[in-house]
Length: 386
Ligand SMILES: *Cc1c(COP(=O)(O)O)cnc(C)c1O
Image 1 (cartoon, rainbow, N blue to C red):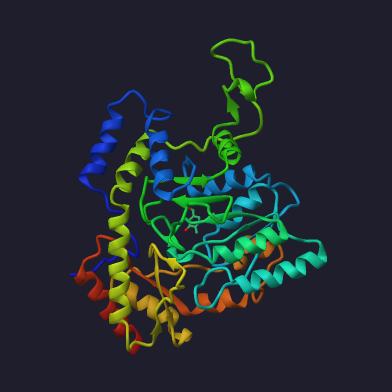
Image 2 (cartoon, protein in one colour):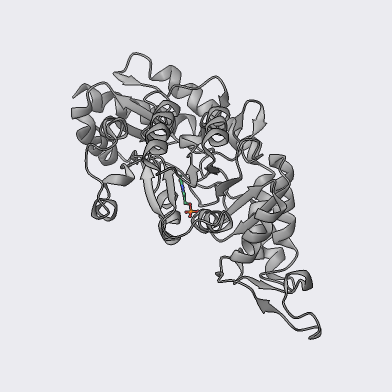
């Protein structure tokens, strides 16, 4: 009779399976026509000029940093309340990573903390080259304010929107890059839509998009305008910089394209589930997620903050033993052993640390049933009553 309710789960349809099978029967498993078609589809969906699909969001973050010429000694700032990849991408480029503490209401990078840190950094000559706001749980950061700070202090912006495809900010799709240089989405199976593994970087800059395309595939070009030697015939190519193999396969892109058909339906269902949690958790000793009026979340995660943080471990253990796979998002990145070796300490970003100690992510995925959701609420109620 055991429940097993995961915190997130992909929704794969017969149409998705057929789309993958069709590629398997075709001429190209990779570097065929399906990846560019998927990119076009995503760009149209987001209202952005370019989309560059890759094998993960981590790779997309890496090539985004490379395209913005992040290198040794540059500074990159992100949120401590994120997956480690948002910070690691800068480390891959040899940059110095720092963090900006979170807003206690949205759990996103705090604009006030960012402004304060920039003022200090200007005095010390340590301004960042790139800031990576993370749209935690699917809710956009306050991009208009961050853009204004970028214009004033001269940094570039990569949105880590791994949680946020299908979300909106000030009535525009997240991914439109209206306030940023580049936006990154993840297609890992727990995210809003999936390609198995995969990610994409969007941009309105043709130069940034081209640079990301090159870094995705060894910086090898067949475009004579990018070559030193133009006279060497049809099979000739040149490697013009140091790139990687971060390519997405056509198999993955077929799954992704088929998933995009249901993206709005997935997000609508996530809204319903979140709304229903909001109602049924009234009266429990938890704080439900606050929503900023400027943003319309994709509801990747539903995070509750316990009134009594001391209970967190016990509540999580009890939920899990009842088959409710509640989770934690996130252990503050600066407290990871790797980042502590780089000099960060507990206490450096107190809002993210106290947030972490008090919060639990409840299961939320589009195929979740009403009775599964009732089980989650019942079990949470029981665990809190202990
Ligand atoms: C999932 C995630 C990533 C990494 O995505 P992959 O596609 O697994 O590489 C990066 N940032 C955030 C915020 C994420 O949630």
